[in-house]
Image (cartoon, rainbow, N blue to C red; front, side):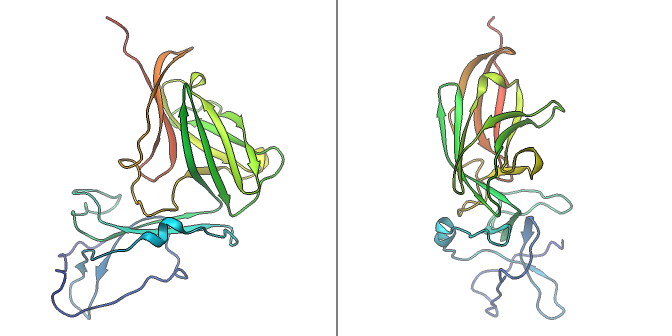
Length: 235
């Protein structure tokens, strides 16, 4: 992408543009520029935004996918693959396109485990539905847990005692082994980067791998994971 100057708010010609929902936008981070005639593209700065409608929207999922777009201003020096870092104050659009989509709702951290509740969009549940907890950096088999289902709503619990040190990603298998593996994420609100905003307590648990501290968190892409770290040995 080109990297140009920021267009000062309130100066020059007033321009207006729209990004209709009918225009496909692949998942990723998209920098916003203004291109006028043959002039150099100018990096846009965000003006006043009202994102309250994003926090209450409930997609139908009738098209088999969920598309989400959230305008935001990256933190200073935020870098994306294949492009220069964005400057604080630049306008960027974060987009997601999930088919189907498992939306995380309430997370309850109780004792030595985590309970997840959410909603499924773009498909339905079938007999054999389950959740999977997969080690991100290990080729070992996934841990599978039972899922309680009520129409498009689901819930399940993960015990930390069965997890070794590392990062564990949470997935939903709405059709069991024969169907798609759906990453559980929280996308349907107005927060583009949930990792520093949604924080949860960590629990100390004794496991077969030794004592660990474990807790849920949202990744840079707003996917739901569990981080497990070994506790230091007493001196």
